[in-house]
Image 1 (spheres, rainbow, N blue to C red):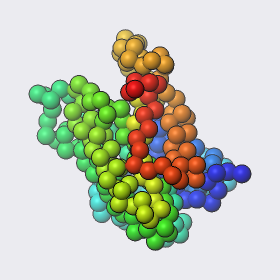
Image 2: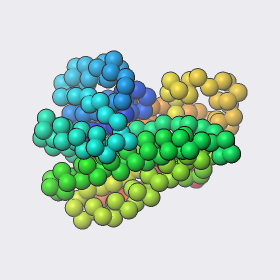
Image 3: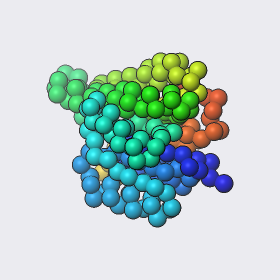
Image 4: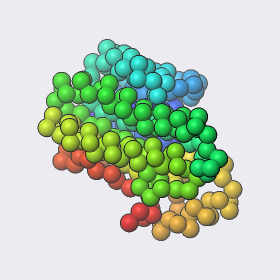
Length: 248
């Protein structure tokens, strides 16, 4: 029997990459899936069709994750259509890499608003629903950059470190309401974006990975699936590094 049978999951930023794999993994485990996207309507429609073919209900919502108002409106629409939200996966993430001396204020603000404020926006918006249900799972996608830092990514690392602090704080607030809040910190993951790196760039990254290979998106999705399931009911406020051993 599927471990998430009948549950309703929301994944932010799921039209491609890790988010897409997470949405498909949750559907395979039995969940109905709502997800957000910003501009890729064609990819969003394709994912909706793919999930519905699995026999799950699915809907896509165009939303600016950095907008508090958009997040609340999206949650309201999902609750109206699906009647509940059991799982929230805050997956939206962007990069605007540059050395600090060259980083613009706009690039700093854009990354922090998209990566960190979006987690506040959607978690804040879903809180009332989950508290009323006396149950819920919130899974925040951070990064090992938020654990170790990374040169040229001060904005990205700060946003991902902020997600970790947010996760631990909100986990303490919601633990007594039977809501578990955890984070995952992926390392180097094989996606369309990383596929554009040169062989030399890939080698430089993989030289730091004890397992000497990148993660597959399905391996990230599997960890999210575990944290979304009843198997993790006694786990909260934790950060799981899915990184091939980089952070030990």
